[in-house]
Length: 157
Image (cartoon, rainbow, N blue to C red; front, side, top):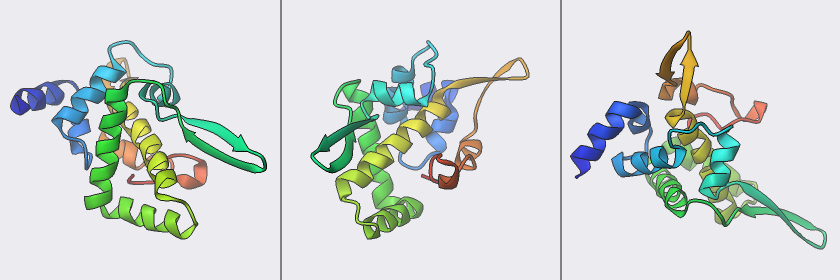
């Protein structure tokens, strides 16, 4: 079964398999969630996955939580990606340590990583038109994209 999933992903979005933490089963889940219809943006995909931030406040405290709606399978896939990357990916581990020193809780850090993971997954699974030919963004193009200074995804996460 895994071989069939791998061949399917390699045919439609091979760049997903280049990312640490994304295996064939997770890639298929992300591809099914993105679907053949084009979503408007990575933010739309994050809302569909249930990982878009929702403001919540209690008195003088302002915070965010994850949207509890959306495709639960996609949310579970993003959770697996984040947990795998926290175990084996040095840059994600460094990000976790950095955010911990800032006083963020594990839950807040995982929320951020799931959001970044949804944006990465969306951009890697999303078809972009370049010079009238349909191509996929390469994993390297996405990883070299905007950094935290420009409000984008932390490099390499």
